[in-house]
Amino acid sequence: MRVVVSESASELIKARGGSLYVWLKRAQCCGSATTLATASEPPAQKTFRQVDSGGPFELYLPAGLTRLPDELQLDVGRRGRRVDAYWDGSAWVV
Image (tube, rainbow, N blue to C red; front, top):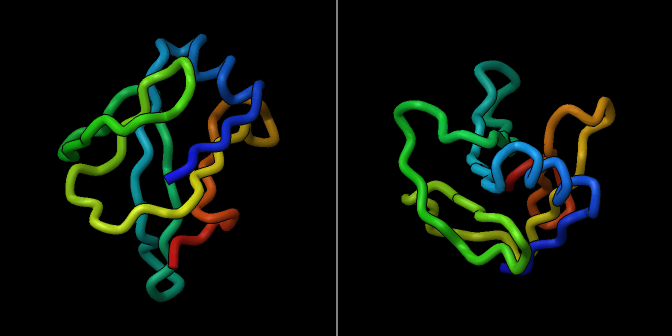
């Protein structure tokens, strides 16, 4: 898996402690839509494993995730308050 990180995302991750947790989030409506969620602290009830980010921060993905994207893109959201993650260039995981 190749990790592509914008400079602004890298700076935000560093400012929030240097760790990023990324997990799959299934929609409660809209069928079986799955997106990615991120946080600087692990959410409760989830287990993670560290993967190589290729950058100056620690990246964690769900421990049970069997299929990784070819490319994980990380960028800062529109309001600059969170890191958005994209699976192979898409906001949806297929």
